[in-house]
Every structure is written in structure tokens, then in C-alpha cells.
Amino acid sequence: MFIDSHCHLDLLDLSPYQNNFSTFIQAEKHHKIDKMLCISLDLATYPAMYDLVKDYPDIYLSLGVHPNVKPEKPLTEAELLTFADDEKVIAIGETGLDYFRTNGDLSWQQQQLKTHISVAKHLKKPIIIHTREAKHDVLDILAEEGADEVGGVIHCFTEDWEFAQKAIALNFYISFSGIVTFKNARAIQEVAAKVPEDKFLIETDSPYLAPVPFRGKANYPHHVAHVAEKLANLRGVDVQTIATQSSANFKTLFNLA
Figure 1 (cartoon, helix red, strand yellow):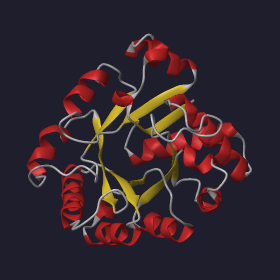
Figure 2: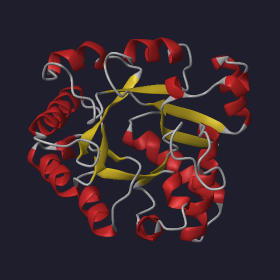
Figure 3: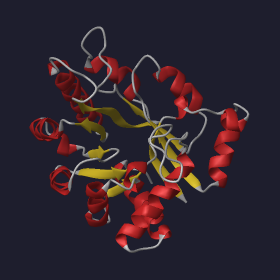
């Protein structure tokens, strides 16, 4: 059984499943998907996302605002707490820094990350971090704001081993997506081979970033098995070992029984 530690279920194309969410979930169970963490991108769409998954005990939620989403007014802790103080919400994010898609003065983005960290510490929930072309600032803010108190995950990992070591030292896990299966992802594959067995997760980031052999097509949670297969190959173990260890790591990180 696999756990998809990062997916956007409210954004999936369900036409292959008769546009029926329950039918889709049944299919995922058939594909040995045990649990899923459905990730928030903004507060405006969160209520609908919550309603979509609220009746499924094996689907968990995060609450946060993606770094590419700039609210009309600065995000406040009170706004996040309105939704995040809920037992179905097991993580804060995704949050972080993205200097690739967003330009100009990004102090608002940095402050938004700090707000998420503060809420995570208040609720004692791990943080889901998105970082793109901002690795030094991300690490600095995580350290300065005491994010290691709650830890979290660097999702869809695209950095190098040096970054991974620093993130792990800050109590963060490293999560691998379909990118690790790409032919040119040598640096990421090096990290996947080296990361300690108790510090990695697997994810799809579906509907984005489908792994080989589905690259360029719609991505679904069950494709996480291909991520697991690549990690197994890189680490010289069998797929079941990756499935078991990543599932155990997920439960440890998010304080699940």
C-alpha cells in the first residue's frame, strides 16, 4: 500500500471516472493507494476542497496559501487559524518561496511564509514547503523562525544533496515526485539514493508532474507507485520496502497512529 503525501484532488480531471469522486477513490484503493494528503493552494478554494474530501477518513488536508498566490491584503494568522484548527487538517501549507514564477519585491512572500510558520508552531502541525530558485532564503527563514520545532517536508524536491542535508538538520523530510523519474534529474536522483530511510516521502503533486512513463499526461495519485519504483531502483531495495518506509515516515511526521 502507498501513501501519496501531496496531491491536489480538487483539481483532477475525473472524466475517466464518470466525473464521480467516489468512483475515483474506489479506483485508487484498487491501485493500492492507502492514504492521500490533499494540499491547499489558497483560502478561497479551501472550503470546496474540504467539502469534497470531508467524508473520506483516509484523505487528510493541509491548509495554506501557495507562495505564488498574493492575497489582496497581507495574510494574517487569524485567517489561517479559522480553517487550520481542525483535526482533518494535519499540515500547514503549501507555503514557501518561489522566485521563478513571481517577480519584483517579494518581501510579501517572505512574510507570508513567516505567518504560516507561526501558525504551524501554534497548532503544532508540520509545514509543507514549496521552494523554487529560493533555496537560501527558504533555509534562512525556516531557521530564523524556529520551524524545526514542528518540522515538515520539502515537497517535490528539486534541489541538491547539500540543501537536503540542511533541510534534514532543520527537522524536515524530503519528498520525491515524478520528477525523480525524469532522465535529466541526476542531482535529484543522487539525493534519492542518499537520503536517510527515515527522512523521505513520496508524492505525485497530481494533477501535475506525471512520472515516466506518463510524463506530459494527466497525473493521478496511483502514479506514486512509479515514483516508488524509481526510488527502489536508486536505493537498491524492492518497491515494497519503499512503500512501507515512506508510509511509516508519513505517519511519524504527521503524528498519525
